[in-house]
Image 1 (tube, rainbow, N blue to C red):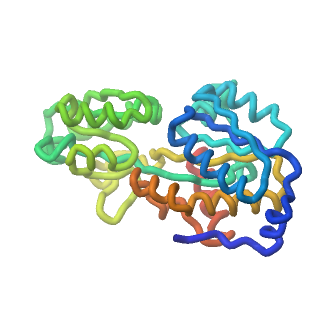
Image 2: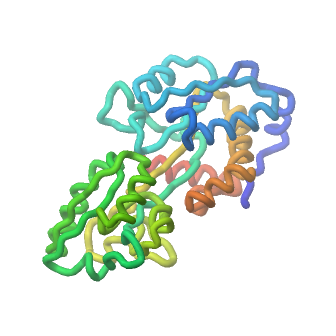
Length: 292
């Protein structure tokens, strides 16, 4: 596993407890979800380095998150994702504008996969057959473009797809619907659902070594932008302090608990991992580009 190597000066700053102010960690999710897991793992490394910090949980209240972000004068780490309200440009009282300066760490990027409901379910050949109809489970609110994308697919293939929208992060619901054959296919981030149902995945929204991208299958528009990305935003840190914080988050990211979660959730580390400062900057540029 790659590890970021910072200068001796940065490590000295950490060991000398250079942060006089308490660091605020904002958990945009629940008290028990994955977001809190990321927060707690980050909290562990801060505590190990004698850095004072506190955790504030806002429970998907994007307006409260925006208020905390705007009003905080303390060093702040804000844990959020591109499918949450704080990154929705259409919600004025929630939106936080991502920049190179405030994007601190790219936790994960999970492309979307199109998979059959089970081993004896419909195949890709069934899906592309003209005149057929299919039910597709998708995560509700993943992207406003999802309806347009499948309308274009229907038009090009002369088929009919009915999108069954599941609550965000409704993995268990999607699995149950696939097993009970209430849907023919699932379209969601990662391959977790298909692995639990025994289904096959036919394509990913990002290129992989084994799966084709959608435009290679039906000549539709590029949807490589469609992925679930999660990251940490930060403010009120000095330049050298940011380097220290990023190195500590990287340590937590590489520790066993976080590594095991990524394996379980089948996250693609190659998309977000880095091993040098220059590579880190490249990755942050990639993240910023995907958010605009």
